[in-house]
Length: 130
Image (cartoon, rainbow, N blue to C red; front, side):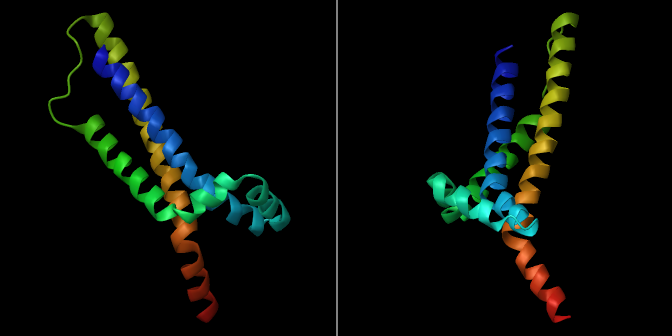
């Protein structure tokens, strides 16, 4: 049961960490794209932590990418087994399914954040020049 609790903590940490990539990078771009640039400016003016997140986005994306890699290993490593007791085995498999769902949600969130932070402007400029 201790391994299951540790795995659950990692997945929640990963989901939280990858969500910060959306808050720092994707949310402002989305607001500006929808014509709500003033809302984005007000958010950055009233929540200084957003400016810190944006300022250190390379570190944030690197750290959350590392967490994703670590979680990939934790979820898919060889030799991972569930207990022999049928009730505990069922519980273990249920937790594993949920952890995998959280993992792929986190991967999607991270990719959206990465795309908006690093790929959106170069793609836009390339399309404008073409």
